[in-house]
Image (cartoon, rainbow, N blue to C red; front, side, top):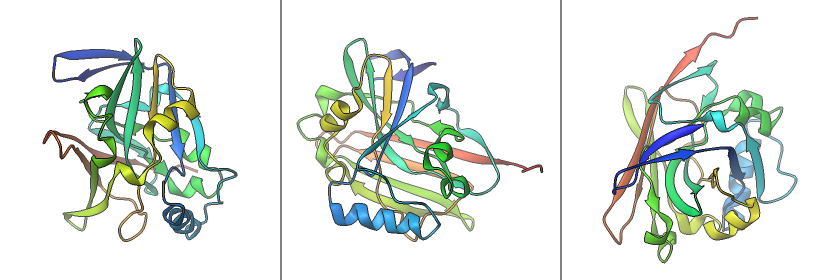
Length: 219
C-alpha cells in the first residue's frame, strides 16, 4: 500500500507493507483499567496481556476523508501513528476505527473490518523525540448537529513510543497505531470524526477529519 504524505519539506511516498495496532498502551495502569472497564460495559472481553499488538491488513490505512463502514455500530479513536520508511521514523495521526458490535466477539476481527483513516502530514521523529510526551491529541465527534469534544490527552499518558516500536519490532515499510485515551461520555458512533495533534514546543499542529458512510447490513 503506497500513500503520499506531506512532511513540511515536500511530499514523501511511503510503502506500507505491515500495519500494527497497539492496544492497552496507557502508561497509567488505573487509566488502562478504566478503558478496559469502559469497553467491558459494551461487552468487550479484557485483554490477555498488556500491551497487545494486533496485526492488520496494510490496505486498511487510508487518507480518504469519506470512509464506508458496515452498519452504524463503529467508531473512531485518535492515536499517534509511527511509520518507518527507508530507515527513518515518522510520526503521524490516525484513527483506530473499530466495529463495536463485532468487538464484543473478537477485538482483532473488529479492527480488521474497518479502514484506518490517517492524516496526510508526518513529522520527523527526531524533531519531536526529546519532547514527545508533551504532544497533545484531541478528538471530536459530530453528534446532534455539532462537534463535541470526545478525547483529550498528551502522549505522556501512553507508553513511551520508542518502547512500543521495540515491542512491535517496527521495521522498514511498517506503520503502527500506538494507543489512545478514554472517550469523554463513553465510546459511541458518530457521523464524523475530527482530531488534532499539537506540539506545544514548536507550535505545529496536524489534523485528521473524515465522515462515516454507513452501508446497510443485509441478512
